Image (cartoon, rainbow, N blue to C red; front, side, top):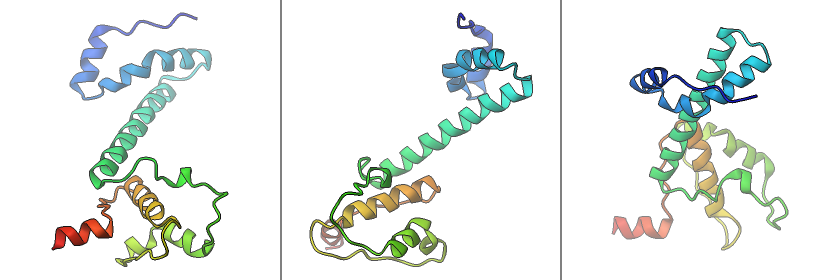
Length: 147
């Protein structure tokens, strides 16, 4: 099936409404809607849901960059074969972010090379996904700035 052509006036209106990114996937979504015999309402829900997802993703990336988080230190990239021992219940509790909601602080301590920086950064990324503002700074840098 040939990709449908998007009317330039539709593109103009979408851009005026600050929905210009919808154009990037609209042709594919129209083909899908045709193949699956979607109603207009189902198509609109799909297209607008794509835009919500795109905006949330962009917003999360923007917050993570502003926080100074390393993009490579996300929990999805955790190497489960690493020979580090930890309390899985504490780990799950930290990942829930309840400590933030209850206005508590955490300190991650341990010897060199056990994943403290990775854990802190991964928690920062999770917090960014939940729309929290984050500032990631290593202790040595923080002490230098405070001095």
